[in-house]
Image 1 (cartoon, rainbow, N blue to C red):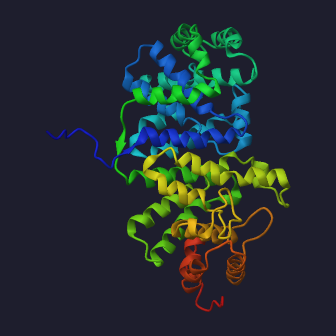
Image 2 (cartoon, helix red, strand yellow; image 1 turned 30 degrees about the horizontal axis):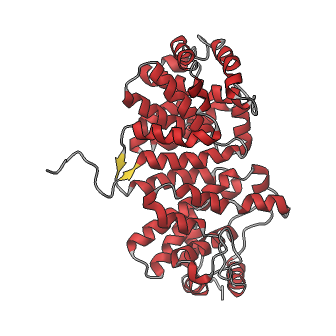
Length: 423
């Protein structure tokens, strides 16, 4: 007998997607990785110490994984981890909450994120829904526990346990609810609570927690909504990359349609465009904004971003082809690109089109080392990349034949081409 409540066969597991996206958020710390996952594990333990229903634990776990989705900058991340009460803290809470509130299934999660740095004795907390405010306070406590641990990096977590418990205890009644502090102190006695936070144990502990979480199936269409959300996170990293992902996605989908790819493939190509630079969250701000050529070490930091994107998206089985296309957007046709050094025959058409869209959009966007290029120079650069074996010739011919539409997709500006000469 068919179970009407069972998720459809093609349903997307939103918990799985959130876990993949937390991989991206964890990159912002550069050297301080897995912060979101550790906070999620710490928070889930406290929630069970409070005896909360599993539905609340599931919402809390998801909010903790995504609690820093309003942070793209490595500089901001350093402040948040290093300071208990930084002046700029509320901004990332509000940004993250606004982003998550645009996605229906994450509405309650967004409210937890909005409050996750709100002191327990603050008026803003008393004006909020009490149950949600308590969950947010648990995330705040877990976030500070991990921050305290990070100040003691290199030390055995079992040796850090008592100093951290004392530090948290001193904040009860002001920053944290006494009830939440008591629950933390109870669960923090167990060695396993701390050892699970070590890098080689975190992934398995997170997967166990995911297996306990309330299922969150969604239709395939939600992937695009989430991709738009996280494109905002990536593009907010630098003023020089504002709307880059959205415009690359728009241009890639256009090129897909012009080349006759099936509609479903074009939709996936748009998602790949939206998410192709997820890995750039790990590139320090000062490198992305450097107004001079990168040195060898700096370029190595940039080079890894395509592989980081591939690894993040590979966590979601239904995005296997999207992960491949996005991870290959810097591959050349003569095994000269990165990170896989693929040969031309190993690079599928969608990945080739995405690479063209990425280069085109970058050329028409202001960067720290140059102004946007005019139309004729853009075409000249694309042709030179074809000659060098970096871009697909047939794809660039599509751009030449449809230049006005491509320009408008890449810049977001329409019109003004009545007398344009680009050939």
